[in-house]
Image (tube, rainbow over all chains, first blue to last red; front, side, top):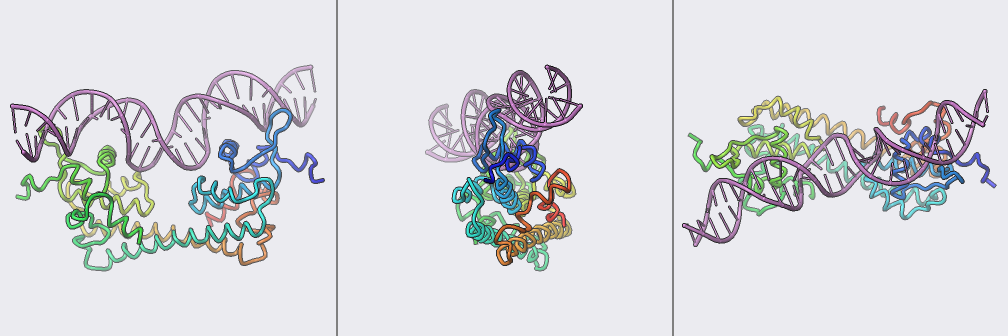
Length: 152
Length: 152
DNA sequence: GTAAAATGTCAAGTTCACTTGAGGTCAAGC
DNA sequence: GCTTGACCTCAAGTGAACTTGACATTTTAC
């Protein structure tokens, strides 16, 4: 049951339905992000639920998550069937947290940028964003100030 | 005046003060993002204001702006002296706009993600983020839905 | 004046996320 | 049954942003 040939999609079909290039699908498979069965003639056949897995990858990409990170979360997901609602909830929570972090970073940057326009540092003498030199040199080598702000 | 040797920095000094690797400074120079004078022995000597230019590059990087884009804005900036307050204001405005766009994109994504958790689509049956298959296939080939949402 | 540290050039390597190409096989329609 | 389109593998290429290495020269310090 639910094993009739119609249930399996060719790589071309998957590509058309997800908008992901065939070469990219091959690539994802080489990373273990997706999987396929093979016909006797060695052609890939995808179960339908693989479309969901692929769309999860696409979501992650939109979130700016690297495939390596996707690999990590996917390790906690069943490869041979649809993730459960619980899995999905866990994933969305995780990703939501990462989005929040990203947003905070942007907002921090925005504050610094606006501060530079709004305040007296238009002269670029004491701008928090621009000041990378002299005084800071005493703090030792390596990146700082900009990175420090990032870490904060 | 203001031409005494103390006024010129070696790559090592610039690297230490900006936190940018020497190899990266070479690279930036090859792209025309920064410039240097040379000693009789062909070693680089940077005027002090080059530190500001470099910190502008660092700011841009934090904003997720590519070096190519930085090149474009830098084309409108004097290479041989400090950018004016006007230049800086123009730049911050431009970058601020780009930050805003990025933030909006994240917020859009966040809404979709939260919608997926909060609403009935926990079942993953009609999730806006996840639905890449079947019904959509009728809309023709190529990426869509995810990209469409992005464009919206 | 010489040894050590800093610097120079240039080519090649690295990572990410794929794409392209070559050369060959498989499956579907007529 | 055969042509055409879809598919296969594997190696190499792409572009961004650098880094690493090899080897030569310069500058600084003692």
